[in-house]
Length: 419
Image 1 (cartoon, rainbow, N blue to C red):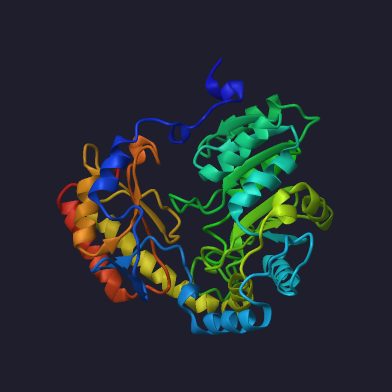
Image 2 (image 1 turned 30 degrees about the horizontal axis):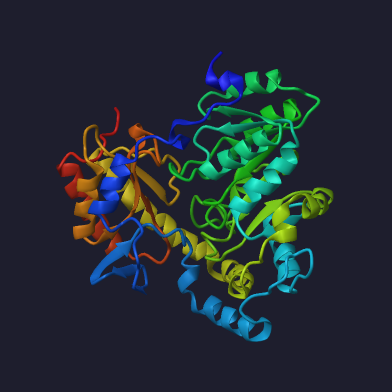
C-alpha cells in the first residue's frame, strides 16, 4: 500500500531532512532572521544596507496608508492598545462591526474573525472534520497540512491529492466513509505559484460527493475579486476573494482568509453559515482561550474597508501593472515562473545545479530583498526565491528589479521556461 493510500502520507517538504542548505544560507546571507532597523516606503534598512523589499505581503500598501494609521491611533486612544478579553468574555464593538462589513463585502452567509489563519487551521478545521476524512492538496500551505495532521491525531484520516489530477480527488472521495465528514482543503491564490484554482470544477466534485470544500485564500483576499463590467484590471473588483472572483457560491464551501497581507493587520476570518459560526464559538479554542488581536489591527481593518471602497480598485490596477511588467520581462528573458494568472506572487525556481546562496548574495549586493525558498522549506526541485509586488512599489523600483533579473538570467541562474 502506498503512503498516500494509507492515509498517513507526509509531503516531502514537511519531513525533517538535513538542513545543510538552510544552515549555509543563514550563515552566508542576512535574508534570514533579519533585523530590520528602518523602513522608507518599500525600502528597508538592515544594518547600514538599504534594499527594496519584495518579501512583504502588504499587497495594497495599507501598512503605509496615513488614513489607516490615523484611524488606528484614534481607536487606541478610545480602547487602549489591547482589549484583553477572550472573545467569549467580551468583544469591543470593533469586532461585530468588522464581521458585519466583511460579510457584506464577501457576499457571505456569515463570518467569524479570529487572530490568525494558523489558529483557524488548527482549530476550525479539526472541528469541521470531526473524526472524518480530510484531503489536503499537495501544494497547499503547510499550516493547512498541519491542521489536517492535528485532525488525524484526533481520529480523522488524512490524504493528499494533486491539483493536476482531479480524478485522483474523485477516487479518494469515493473511497472515504460517506457517513462521516469529508473536507477537501486547498489554497485559493496559491502561496508560492500565485495561481488560482479551477474552483467551479472542484466545487462540482465536492458537491457531487457531499464533501465540504475548505479554501485558504490568504493571498487572494484583498487582491482578486468579483468581475464587473467596469473592472479596472483582470484582478476584478472589490478584492472580495477567490469565491466571488470565480463566480462561485458558498454552498458546501468554507472560505478562510486573513487581513495580515492585503489589509496589513493581525486578524483572520472564516466564512460559515450562522449556525456553524455559533458552533465554532464553542468548538474552536481560539474564540474561548486566545488573546485577541490588538486594537490597532481591529481599527486598521475597519479603516481598510473604507480605503478599499474608495481607492482599492485603483490600488489593485497599479499592482496589476507592476506585476505584469515583471512577468512580461521574465517571459522576454525566457525564464520560468509557474505564475499563470498574473497575481503578485512570483515564484522563481533556480536552474539545475545553481547555488541559492550565490543568488542570494547577488540579490543582496544589488539591493533586492526577497523570500528565499531553500530546501527543506520547499522540495529540492522548487528551490529558488519568491517575489511579492505591492501597490506601494514604484515603476522605478520595478525597473531596478528587472535589471537584476536580467543579470541573473545572463548568468544562467534562473530556470529556463519550457517550450
